[in-house]
Length: 503
Image (cartoon, rainbow, N blue to C red; front, side):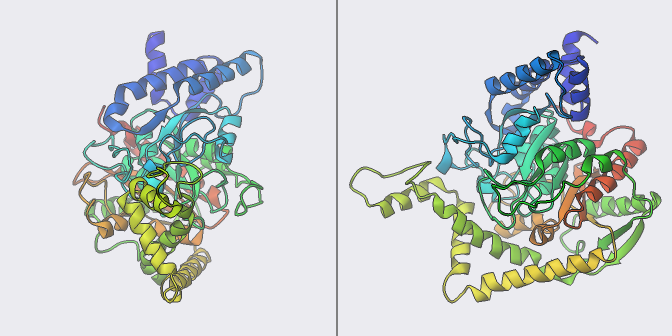
C-alpha cells in the first residue's frame, strides 16, 4: 500500500484506530482531516449530508493537534479525529441554521458547551450537517436546504431529524458525528443507516447552545460506526454544566470501560410486548427475534414485559413536543437575529414578525407551532397538554416497574427500514409512526442506544436493535451493545456497514 493510498483509506478506519495512528505518528491529524475533506468533496454532492464544510477551521484544528504531538504533549483519546456536527449546536464564527431559512446566514458569537468540549478534546469539527428544520421530522426531508440521501440507497431517507449526521458516517465522510434526540432523532437515523447512535440520560450532556425544540425532551448525543467509538465520544461530551439548569451534577457513567468489556452473561433483558405487532415490517421483526436469541446464547435471561402506557406514548409526545416548541420558537420574531421580511418602514413590528415567520418557517414547523399553541390555549390546556403530561408520568412508572425486573430493555429501533424519499411527505401520521419505539424513552428521560442487527431480507436495508437502560445507567447500553456487536462481527466476519453500496 502506498503512502497516498494509506492516507486515503484512513476514512474506513474507526475513530479509535485513527486516534491511535495519530498518537503514534503513523498518520498526522492534517493528513486524516484532508482525507476526509477529500471524501466529502467526492461524495457529498450525491448524499447532501453537510450544510456547511469548515475546511479552513478543520485544518487549523488539525495543525494544532500535530503541533501538540510534536511538542510531546499528551493527547486525548480522540485527538485529531474528524467529526460531523449537527447544525443545531452553536459554533462561534461558523453558520448555524438548524435547517431553517429563518436562521440562514446566522453566525453565532459563541460556542455551545458541547462544541467547547469537542474542541477541548482536540476533535476536528469538519462542518455542520443537514437536519429536519428545528429537528422536527423523521426523514431529513423537512430541511429548508433539501433532503439528505441514505448511502445504502440514495432514493431513500436516512432518518431524521439527524439524517445528515448518520449519512455522513455511513458514507465515510466522518468517523464520528453528533446528533440530538427529542423523540428518536439519533437512534432512528442510526437504525436506517446501519450505524450506532446513543441518546444519553436526559441531562447527561449539556443543552447550552443547542437551539431548543422541546426543552424537556431534547438531548444531544454521540453517533459513530462502532460501539467503542460512540463511548469515546460520549465520554468527551458528557458531564455537568452550570450553564444548563437541567444538567445532572453527577459523575459520567463508565461508558468506555463498559464498551471495552462488553458482556450480557447473567443480565436480565426485557422484551416489551407493546413494541411489535401491526405496522412492523416482517424483516425487522425477524432480525429482532434473531437478536433476542443471540442475547440468550450470550448468557442473558429474557424476560417478557407488559408496559401498557407505551401505547399512548406517540399521542402524548405529539402534544408535549409541539406545545414546548410553540413557546421556544416564539423567540424568532425578526427583531433580534435571523431573517427579517417586510421591514420597509411602513409596517408594524407585528406585521414584520408575521411576514418573517411565514417566509422563514417550513410547513412541518408551522404545523407543530399551531398544534402546540392550540394545546396550550385557555380551555384546552387540561384536556390536551395536561393529560399528555399525566400519560408521561404513567410511562415513567411503567419503565420503573420494568427496571425492577430487568437490567435493560431491547426492542426494534424502528418499525420499518428506510422508506423512499417523498413516500410519507404528505402523510404526517405515517411519518410520526417512525418514532413509535423511540418516543417512550424520551418521555421518561432514560438512556437508549441503536446499533445494527442485520439487514432486512426483503429489501437488504439495515435494521436497528434498540437497547434501553435506566437513567444514569448509560454504561449498561455499551456493555450490552459491545457484546452484541462483537457477536455479529464474529458471525459475519466484518462490520455490517461494509455491505453498504459504494458511492
